[in-house]
Image (cartoon, rainbow, N blue to C red; front, side, top):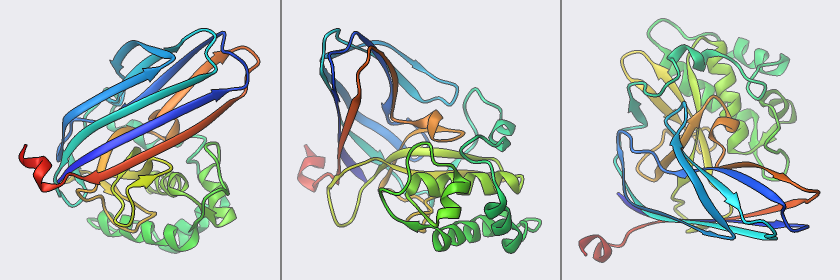
Length: 275
């Protein structure tokens, strides 16, 4: 499947910026089942300083905001070709060893609510880790209702379980914490999802991957109750949201920042594919 993507990030600052740097993880990965046909990033009131691959093989672009700017816009456009591998990404790659994805973070660490969930599920039986992970995904989806506006980027997995609601980021963090507690390496994924009922979206998507012997990394989209298919585009991975966040940065000066994101993902029409 060939997907066309447009992702616009717009910042408004309450006061002109003295100095600001933004770390962008907005370039899709070249990975099994996914190839980048075109990708371009354009900037208004900012300019790229450096591009590098981080410890998770995410492409990172370091961008400097023009001094005195009160607004910044970053627009990404491109085309990505995807294949259906039933959510299987394959062998581990990156500078971090596989065991590092067993370590809990502040955002994934289980508390009483998550530990109760794990006890009720029971641990994975020998040779049945895949079945356990599918059961875990279904349990999280049942217990934590998808609801926007109730959680934020600093909400922990335990807090989301206790509240009983959250979004895809929360579902992924709960899955990561529970999988790691069951001694299964797991990582966070940020990216794009082509929706069946719309083109325009207000955010990127997030899901999780777990490493299973003999298969490698396998994806689980808890929010939608499926493993990723050709509608999904992987952009960045990490131990939690902070490692894979599309945009992070710092600014100097007493300014408040407002962020607006517009995303569109659609399948290329046949006539476009033939050109």
